[in-house]
Image 1 (cartoon, rainbow, N blue to C red):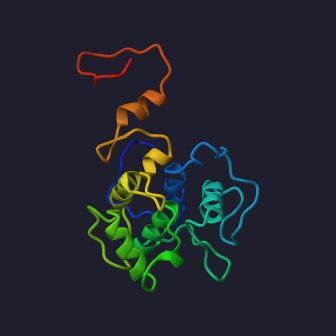
Image 2: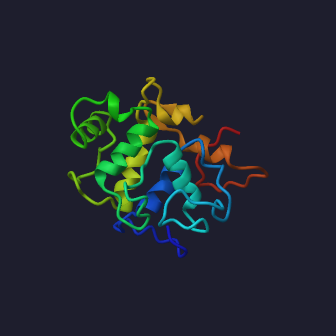
Length: 188
């Protein structure tokens, strides 16, 4: 959400914001410093930009790419096919392994893996925060190219195809713990 805690689910997601979401949904989530990386890979991303490290990782890992003119267009909207391609690459599916031509091949594979569940956009559609929420949830429960559930590959507990959020919360807490009467059942 924003500084006021508003989720703005219908807001358009920029390529910079999507890079941050991708890194946050990966094993690189804890490797980002507080202020820019000190250098930039693209002519339109300053080294001091809040997203420069996220963009650097997303590009170095091959999840996202820049444009032939040397730009990244960080404040341009991310499209369905760009988002699906990034998610597929995070799962270990390179474009060369997909049947058909781009972007239809990426969209078809994303649909077959369930990445597009709850997303009603068609090719060329601009992703909203709500669409990204569904995409990244679906990513967590999808199988990677090795057949393992993506969330399990990140070390999360997956039960019956669903991420065990209590285990995610428990992993990030340190005691002492105080629970009210309406608190969920915890394993400790």
